[in-house]
Amino acid sequence: MTAPETTTAGLPEAARAATTTAASISGLRRSFGDRAVIDDLSLVIPSGQFVALLGASGCGKSTLLRILAGLDADIQGEVTVARRRAVAFQAPRLMPWKKVWRNVVLGAPGAGRAEALAALAEVGLRERADAWPATLSGGEAQRASLARALIRQPDLLLLDEPFAALDALTRLRAQDLVGDLWRTHSPAVLLVTHDVDEALRLADRVVVMKNGRLEHDVPVGLDRPRDVGADGYAPLRHILLRWLGAE
Image 1: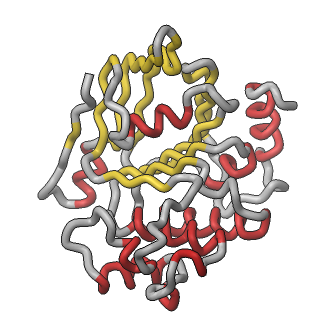
Image 2: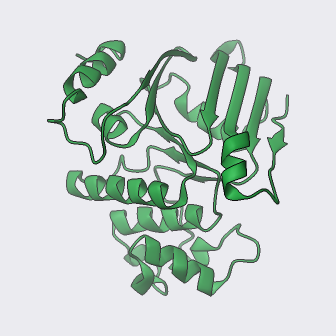
């Protein structure tokens, strides 16, 4: 069944946030041959909520994200997604023959250099607008990918392990950047990750996927900014690791 889309064009921002969800999934099933990668999955992501999706490799996380991104419509069940959505993958997927600012506006109708520069400024890359992608560091390339998502002003931002290839320090800085962008623009976010600490650092809510289903769903009620030494952090981390079988 092809996923329908919803739109709230013309509504004030506050009204849109109050009356919509960013994504609603009911009874979702996605099979490849005889194997169901996603089986009877249901999930609601409210507008503005930051959700982290944890699970072992092969459990269906990236398949779910691709469905929400509109890249896979060969499904059964009901999927309703905000019309304005954007996705950033683990690989930045920049076109090497286009300068950075032209990569940022790809697929964004009506956006030009001025909009690209504004988006790049938000991720700290304005001075690299005219650079070629091959000259960027890994962290810079991922920030360019985030700018490309940001320029679409998404109501739903989908992040598929965007920090996995970064070194530890660059990864922490990239996490901080995503947190800042989320607080500034208030999209709903679905972050696919293997990293429990990353999930706890960023998310309002963590869901754990296993064998194509959402097995656990827990709110993260910790004050921001978050630190591993904060009250309540260690018990939540312990619970998530136990659910993942990785204590």
